Image (cartoon, rainbow, N blue to C red; front, side):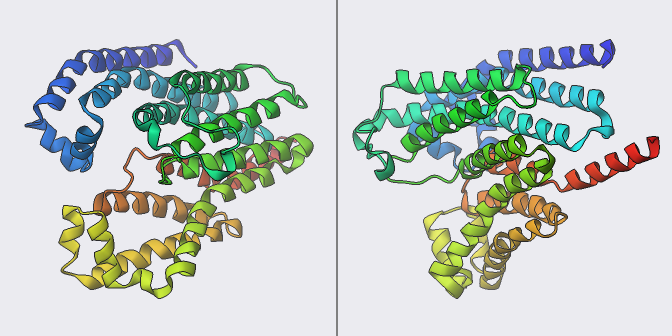
Length: 362
């Protein structure tokens, strides 16, 4: 990578950091005044006003103060991708490609960890309502002190840094132990997150991907030649979130799920101006529900035909943006969307072209 490229990344990072730093005052004024530009933000994020009323302005202000640091994280992440692409090139072998994607996933889970810790901090204000999940009740009798949650977050960050930056040998078993430990800490934090009587699916695909990535690492460790199969297993942990969600709808609701009156029920439970605009057209409501259910049930086709990953990625983006705009569920910033990049089916194509290049060179 040339010095000119390094300078561009550095300048881009400084400009963004300075912009967010001096923009904090403007953001705080918008939050408190709730006029002018705030209406535009609310049109992009309909539940913003509700969250502001529920959590108070301090929560959103604390988030705005993090933007400059999150900008740096994203930029470092982009630099890492660009550096690796320049270093490895298209001739990477199968094992190194999978290893790179594993590292990429661990970087992404760090991006969303601060959001989870912030959610737990807010929920800690209602710790008296906490009811531990039955499978974790043997060690979670009450909502823990904020100190333990902070330590858990630090452990995840620290262990992930060691996992990504240390120079491991091919047969080192320690990376697997670290991965399992990261997964267990995430499990602990999510068990607290779900201990208030409501299961939130925000982190479902991210956590399912973490389970799959650990399985993938074990497969590669015991049989390096099966790295492509291990990555296919990892992908299955992601698209299966959609498949089993659709299967649940079919098993519990059957044909009633796609009826026009069910769309009305969903609109009543999740009132939104976009949803109300569709209500006068019941056929359109049914088409939307059929399309969403069809995408979920057909996601499993990627196991047999990897090219279906293109459909899963496009369908997943439309699915999540649609549920956000119509029912105000989730959002464009949801982990669900970014995890979809791991369903990209170009892995086998790259692997075959790499093998062909090696044969030509011989």
